[in-house]
Length: 349
Image (cartoon, rainbow, N blue to C red; front, side):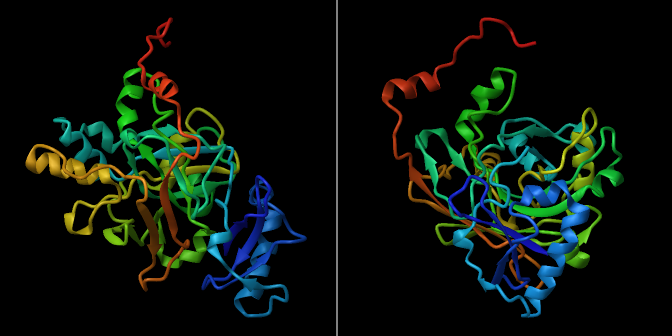
């Protein structure tokens, strides 16, 4: 089934069931008002939503209405947890080689993962407010899963059973903020603004044979200002499947229902497939020509990300966002303070 969240003016929106062809929707009234409720009580509530979904697809839903992705929030507008991996090794290899480094063997056996902000997740058509172009805004087209409860120490196959829903993500990154943050020794914070999500999440069975061994066999399409920049395969080059990523997260703690786990930027070795982030294009330019030529995103740029099945049908609906100036620009003094490197009084433990 396919689910979405309607923007009703509240923080968490209103849960909708959406038809397979993305033309009709119905509020999940009487079953659940929010997606998190369903994740918390999946075994009881999801069969009821599935029944509504079947009625919607057969044209028998009495309260159906036309679906409009522009009215959607992120499926989980705020989540208990958002973590992102780096499952496509080609992405990491390109970025390391552009810095004059070679990949390590450990990268093939031990997933990279960071914990991002989950209190404010963007909807598919929300504007991206960029205070300073010099911060180097970049898009990152990714897949993600939303989990149920997963026990601490779960094996990869057990963790894979915890997948409840699949999602499409744009994990926005401020590239010029990354190096100063990592140099502090703690990790990403300011360099990772709010992540955006496609309007729909779907149960793995909705993908049929395309969901294989914790990987989705689909095609990631990215456009920048109407020009196609990526047509990447999401399945074959995903080194760590979602079960392995969830197991990595669960190694030392429980994973609770409503946790979102990202794949990292989709990336293919075949350069004709394009790139799912500008950092890869700049890395290729640096490797080939000694320096990057492609600029980071500017105010007014528009990024569209979609993921389609073998027949070219959109699985999640598209993320379609425009970069705009922050409506309340930072004062020069505040901006300078934000950019200043302050030496910590105590070294990080």
